[in-house]
Image (cartoon, rainbow, N blue to C red; front, side, top):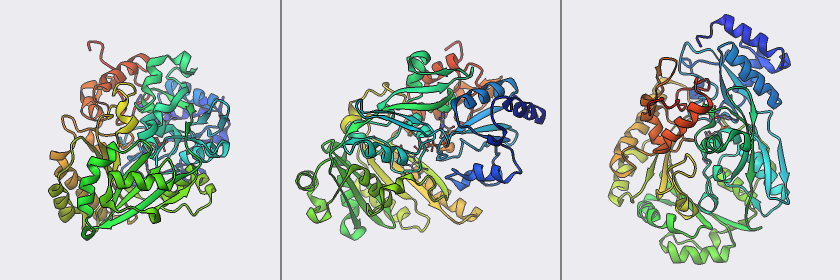
Length: 501
Ligand code: FDA
């Protein structure tokens, strides 16, 4: 797989026998840059120094995906798959290897959402966004919901295959926990569903990151029941309004709240915002908050009652006063981005929060700190049920740094802030190994190295066990069965399990 330019020419020639040439974009043309940038969420991933695809294929049907895989293998051109382009390190469309010649399969046009109201199920194309899925779900029935993340422009393909955590997860688990079937193109170019791919591969693509195993074309998902009226609030407290004391208390309370209540904390601009989604009406929410968390002082005036779909808008835009169609907007704001994350099992003491606030949160380059509670249904699922193993923590902690100014100085400042806080958190967060959610990709955890023609299993364990703990070996075992030659490969793809293991 050296992929010389003659291989690339032969690859494009091969594509031309099955894919209309207007769907195959090569560098130098306007439509190439337009398509490349169309879903680039993180501008850091397209800075000079990263390698861009030699061709992008804007597929419109599953047969195009099959043809690309067959041609790629025949002519030694690897493939990266992009659904929504929200990978934190841009690995769906950029490579860190200056010598790599690869193609991108862009699935944005594979975004049909086909709903079976009677069965509370839908087939969703990987190229749909979760905003489009939320919109279609509620349009089908106001009492249907789907557990997924906060940002509506995230793609279904990457999100479901990496897990999918959000405001309904304490009640109904991850997106991946609510996947019933999937259609996948494997390394042989075959189109498989759950019964033809088998349970091992079906397990792997629900949280293990499908990029290592094939290309998921569509997903069959199960809707979950939500009431016609839900309630949200957002209450902000500054340092001198007891923000630190409240965060310290929150750690004990949020994971044991009733499953109908999701209460997260966002710390930004020296304010801690306590943001809630309650699957019920205001009166019951006020009673619950008084019983569990009286110190926050939540009252009826804080309540905003609305439909579930409006609550997804509130969760992201901080106001529900926008038309529901805002969820159909496929392009959000793009910026430079870097994220580090952890999981917490025992509460971080108040003094540690005081120190973090004093030393880090007052700096102008401070990231948004997000605390997302687990517990509830999440805590009842076995860590090996899906590849996502972090079920028994009390919450997840994310440092989300985003900025608009391009320049090395800003970049370095942002990165050193993140690495400094990450270091200072060491005594308080998950250990041996540190536990990281696979969808919050962090290249600092380690990158793959080759051993012969395939990715080294031993080297990959360094980053892989942080994402997947004991499930990493099982993922590698699936990989060795479905893609032993390691065709689907990137800097953090699952390697095949060596034969002697
Ligand atoms: P993208 O297309 O970049 O793909 C991500 C990875 O999946 C790549 O390795 C890619 O090759 C692979 N892939 C994508 N589609 C595939 C397919 N069809 N078949 C095989 N492999 C495929 N997460 C969360 O759980 N809760 C949240 O609230 C948020 N919020 C959030 C906000 C913002 C602003 C960002 C940028 C990200 C998040 N995320 C998140 C993280 C998000 O879930 C994660 O980045 C997803 O992988 C993004 O999926 P996309 O399809 O958009 O990414």
